[in-house]
Image 1 (cartoon, one colour):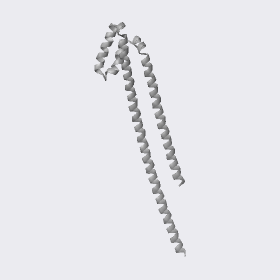
Image 2 (image 1 turned 30 degrees about the vertical axis):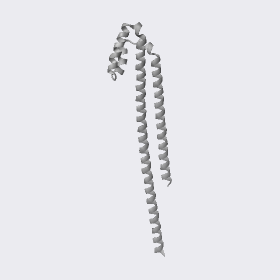
Image 3 (image 1 turned 180 degrees about the vertical axis):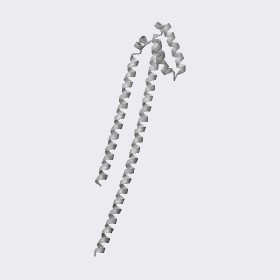
Image 4 (image 1 turned 90 degrees about the vertical axis):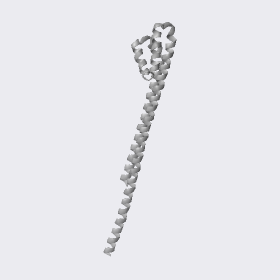
Length: 169
């Protein structure tokens, strides 16, 4: 009986440790999400400096990441960048607005991806929790079976004791 209580306490301790680990994972996900949001806000504030510093090839590579998904917008943006190079003084404000829209779109996409990842991790945690609950139910069932066997053995021992006492009398 003491061993069974000890096993049950071990199972409860393991369950608590797993719950702590799941909470830790959720907190790490939230911290990563906050860091990404801060980095994206910083990128938005530094767009004007990036335009002055980056070469045309770097701009093309950055835009291609977005334009794989938005091919039609790729050609429009490249045309705007070519016009921007030719008429830099007249079109600085328009190019700046377009890049702001792109950065906001990237932030929204990253936010959606992070939400999907968080939902996936939560589903995995729920599945692990369900498996643990099933294991606890199976262990409780085994404990009940052991208790039934113990009771049957106790009854058999009582009967054997009564039988032996009747033989001596």
